[in-house]
Image (cartoon, rainbow, N blue to C red):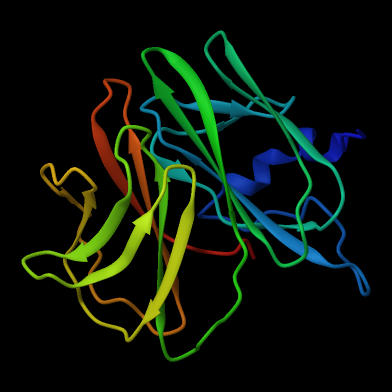
Length: 217
């Protein structure tokens, strides 16, 4: 499989949320696009690519446009540990690579979100399930038996659209242990996409990370 060196050397631009960065790939007329982002769910910074660019702990990158159907590759490092990413994305897909740590060991979870619909008048919330001992997981409104997303299995992502609202959300695992509150997100905006990442931290405790999906400009 051919690995594009530009991806390894240029990851720095993918993780800047304050400044616009140059595109890593040319996706000119006639080339189909896909999208990729990285989320560091560990408490430590990780370096990305041969240039050792850093993504801080509990930080997410914007989605970066890539050409679908072409091989992508890169190295993720934290301390003495490293992970190798090799992938190829279908047209229109959104790939989230979540970096997690369990008992001192670094790993990554790959979530492919193939968006099939969009409404400029509705909000969209997804649940990414990266907590292996949770079983099926739901997203519900706190204090109400109203479930926005239901029955998400480990390693899967499920997205739902609904009318914009200001909601206090929580994630519930199948065995009905204590729900996990989602950090306050305020008023959801029409036409915007949001993600909830369910994972286990380095101590094995379940936690969630709330992300507003953004595209690199």
